Image (cartoon, rainbow, N blue to C red):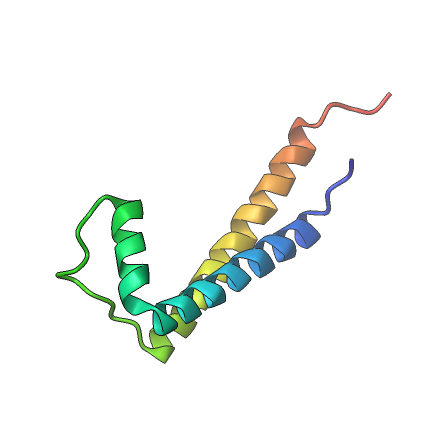
Length: 88
């Protein structure tokens, strides 16, 4: 299988961006439920902290996660290509 680093990176960024948008919407629609879920996932009590999400922070988070996902996807594809055994 031949993986294009740029296409894989773009797919990674798209998947993470979609996940981020869905998660941000869930936080806006169900803040208490998502706060409890996040507390359980992180093994901490977040009730004292609460959510501090504004539209601009959601956008900045989306951009940051998309860039990180793109870079990590690109690195994974490059590593895969380097480690892939030559075809016979």
